[in-house]
Structures are given as C-alpha cells and as structure tokens.
Image: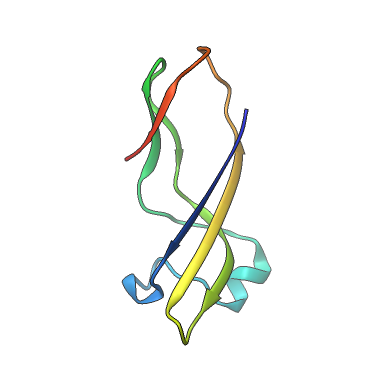
Length: 83
C-alpha cells in the first residue's frame, strides 16, 4: 500500500528539524524524529520519520514536511503506531 504522513512543528524546536528555502527546493529527505512501527499483525519498523520539506515560515516559527512511501502488507489488517 502507499502511505503518506505529514508533520508540522516549531522551527525553533531544533536546528536539525526545520526547513528553509534550500531544503524546500532540493526535495531532499530530511532526518525526522521517531519511527512508524508495526505493533499488531506484523513486526518491526515500517519506516523512520524522515520527511521532505513542503512549507515553512520563519516569522511564524513553523515547518511542515511530508513523505509518501510504499509498504508491503504481510497480513490483512496490521496496526501501525508512532514511536
């Protein structure tokens, strides 16, 4: 299946987790914080929470990123959690 997640946070939270114009235009995968894990019906890490910058505001102190990826389901109804 194809999964998409979107995250937003304060730019001032960390210098490692913010977007600027060079990140947005380069489409690079930025390091995130945490993972999506399969907690029922399968096991292990589905993906780390890396993201591509989509929007940001220096004056309002926020950043948003998104990521889309493919995941091969091994059971009909797994449960996926944020860790």
